Image 1 (cartoon, helix red, strand yellow):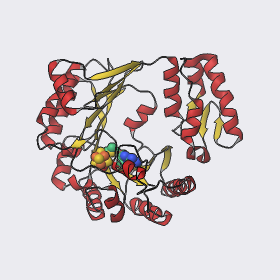
Image 2 (cartoon, rainbow, N blue to C red):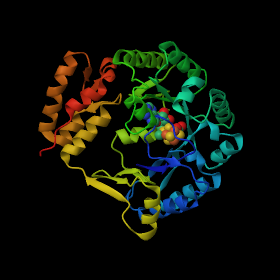
Image 3 (cartoon, rainbow, N blue to C red):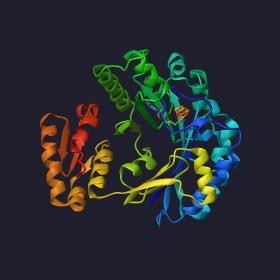
Image 4 (tube, rainbow, N blue to C red):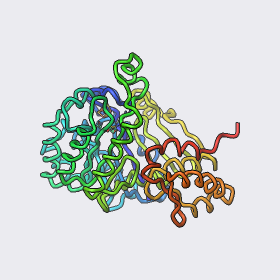
Length: 378
Ligand SMILES: C[S@@+](CC[C@H](N)C(=O)[O-])C[C@H]1O[C@@H](n2cnc3c(N)ncnc32)[C@H](O)[C@@H]1O
Ligand code: SF4
């Protein structure tokens, strides 16, 4: 079992909060598509004999690809890798790129999961975030997606946007659940240094919301999503039964994956690799046989930290049998001893052989996770 991630670094407009690797789109994707195809060929053995069960077009904005370009990429992947017949194929779409022709084209390519970057249904938020679309376009995009016959549809929302009240967040969620979406990714706004919001924060033009307000918004999210029939399977992710993102779940379950495109990450079980965040440099290096990535071998401590970081964010939690099998008695004792304190505070549950965060624990998941991290020796 393995996944393939394809990163498209283009965006037509830069959102004020975003620090994912992206640049303003060019009209011509051909040099980039060629490089992607070359990279896939160069790395066709990366996944060994594993079957590809998920493909994910992420970004940036993969909806800048034409249907023909997507077809070329998928055909190439199908030739180079063993792709399972019922492979989950996701594409992230920006609402203003959506139209019925494009959706019909995606359906013909057997793309079977659509992720729409809605962010908010309120025009004032969308303006503040510097999104390209307004709420009318978002509504239209979601309706068209269902009309085109897509069933496995997920949306992204952001909360904790300065100026958004609890009532407005609740009505954003209610409106989302009035559609037959099967999945929701809801992210708390993080103000990243170097972004427009980061600079506005430095100048005191915006402020981060306080912890108490963040917790209230998170509670509203959990309550509304659960009463609409969604399962909270990862801190920021909610799915109807059997509609969890297989691709993302596999990241959290340490399944191997190949990442293609600038800034894409790969993992083969014992090392991590990340491509350079520079489109021109990436294309040039792929074409001239130069190295276009950095990598790091994961020692036992790094693998332990990665496992804790990803598993504690999920409803499956830390599997203590896995810990004992992989990190021996020392790793097992370390985890169980540390967990005791969090359990006593009601932040963690020890259920049979798993350790999972309670809802209260999820609110401070980053702090709890950092307490579990094993420090470097030096
Ligand atoms: C990198 S974007 C790609 C999706 C697509 N380009 C779009 O914007 O619709 C993936 C998602 O991450 C979330 N995101 C990105 N930066 C964020 C931030 N600073 N705080 C909270 N959510 C963020 C947004 O919800 C976004 O839809
Ligand atoms: S949120 Fe999406 S569209 Fe906006 S800059 Fe980031 S990747 Fe591009």
